[in-house]
Image 1 (cartoon, rainbow, N blue to C red):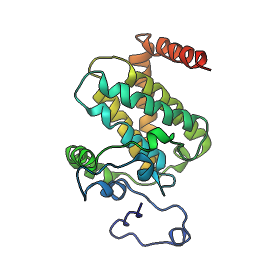
Image 2 (image 1 turned 45 degrees about the horizontal axis):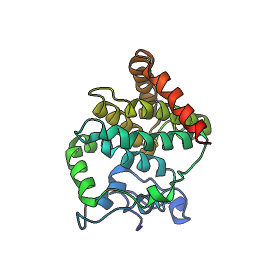
Image 3 (image 1 turned 180 degrees about the vertical axis):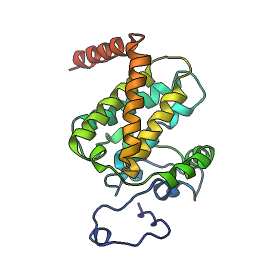
Image 4 (image 1 turned 90 degrees about the vertical axis):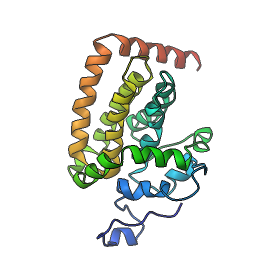
Length: 225
């Protein structure tokens, strides 16, 4: 995958010249979907190829796309397990996502991404002006990644539950998680932590569905071992 162009005004620094981390901002990364054949398939493995710290954020961004499909039951059934996969890997302390082959070969069409970006273009541009790398201790160190992974697991479980009218809500919440990971914005991540804990308490523990569904998932996985 061709590395994305730098943002206007960005000067390549010594870290970039040496192949180290570069600021893979949301607008820069997603520009890869804006030009080209709308019917072209974008394998997830190709999308994530060459990304560094932003890989988890981009993986999460792509994973939540089905949650915005206005068909009950479908979005959560597809996005929920993918969010769980991402959360579990972060919870285990991985610094880059591992994507199984059957998932890496799948991905959205360029036209699907373009339509989605068109719908959120205005708020995304506003967010892009506000977001910036800050409070790194809340994003990248192992304890922060583990805590974010735990919350992603819980929100992923909630997303997969048949709770009416919540797909867009959890999808938007996960979109903010993705932006915080991509932009390395600790302030936004702190907001996400508070919002995710509130959602888990209100929708999960309040109704008892989160705990029961988590137990059910554990029993299924342990039974398959």
